[in-house]
Every structure is written in C-alpha cells, then in structure tokens.
Length: 156
Image (cartoon, rainbow, N blue to C red; front, side, top):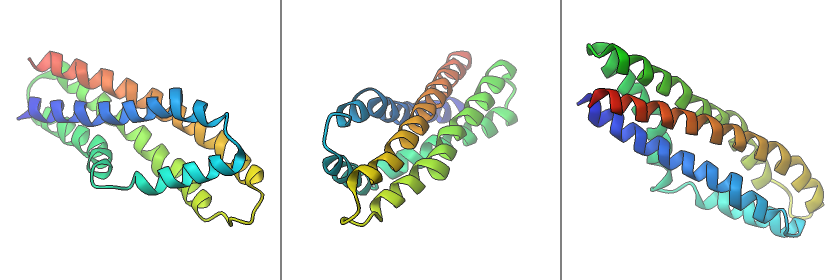
C-alpha cells in the first residue's frame, strides 16, 4: 500500500511540477511579448479556466498524497525510504503554500481589476511577483518530485 501511495504522490507532484515548469519556461515568457490589455485578459481567462475537475484533484493530491505517504512510511519499517518520503512531503507542501498564500491572492486581485483601470499598471502589480512565486513553486515541486522518486526506488 505504501508504494501505491508513493507512486500516486509522485504522479500528482510531477503533474504540478510540469504545470509550474510550463508557466516558467513558456507561458509567462510568451506573454511578455503581448500588449498589457491582452496580458491581463489572458491571465484572467487562465485563472478562471484552471479551476476545473481535472486540476483541483491533482492540486490537492500534490499536498495530501505525499502526507499520506509519509504517514504510511512512519508506520512502516523502511527507515531509508521513510526519511526521503517525509522530506518529499514537507517539500511538496511548499508549492501548495506558495500557491494558496501568494499566487491565488494575486490571481484574485487580477480578476477583480476594473476593466477601466490602466492595464499596464494592473500588469505591473501582478506579473513580476506572480512570476517569481511561480519560479519558487517550480523549484520546490521539482525537488519534491526527486525525493518522491527516491522514495519509490528505496521501496522496491
């Protein structure tokens, strides 16, 4: 059962890591070249569409599954895998916390922006901080992914 939880954790964290990576390497750099109004409109549309039945279970799973894996490892007797799994769960919580505490409030503020506001000012307040937070999510989720992969390898 522990290896199944570790595998599910790895998939969920891997999917989230890939999403963050895509924003870091393609979406946000691609949006740098668009006009301010288009940037605001596109990010508002993405922020609305991402809250869906495919994203939310994976996002929540990227936090809850590593925690469940760590609990199962604490109850088991594989000491080597235990510490990697616990480390993976702790590090997997970082991008979740960054998202809930940093990116989501910025998304909500962007969504609430008045269409009559200056789009360049709206963009300036949003883009830099959001992009930096996303980079931290990318690094942390990739590190958690590596730790969870190591956990699986030790459980085999």
